[in-house]
Length: 170
Image (cartoon, rainbow, N blue to C red; front, side, top):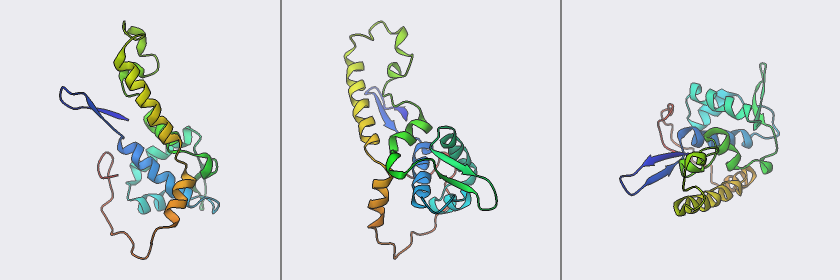
C-alpha cells in the first residue's frame, strides 16, 4: 500500500498498480483452476497488463508460495492452493508488504519513537489497519469467481491499450 501525502491534513492510502494487477492476474489464474497452467501471455492479454510488468508480479507471487510455475510447451502458472484458501490479503501482503497505515506501525519501526506506547494516532491507525486486513482477508478468490459467474458475458469488453508498469486504471 502506498501512503500519499495529502496536504497538511494527512495522507491517502492507495494500493499500487503492483497490488491491483496482482489481484487481477491471480483472478485470471483462479478462473482457470483445475484446467492446468495458464500462460503468462494469456493472463497479460485477458487482463490488459504488460508482459514485462506481469513477469515481475508473478515472480513475487511465486516466491510467496501463492502460485506455482510449470515449465514446458504447455507451461504457465497455476494456484498453489485452492481458490477458497487464497485471499486478497494474501496477494496484497505478498506484493505490497505489511499493511501499515503509519510508518511507526511497520515491523521494527516503532523502536525509535518515544511515544509509541501511548500515542493516540498510533492506536487509531492500528485499529483502522486491523479492519482493512480483516476485510482483505475475508475475500477469497472463490468468492470472486462465484460473483463473476453471474455476470453477463455476451458483450466482450472493448480492447484497450495494454497498461504499462505504474500506469492505468484498476
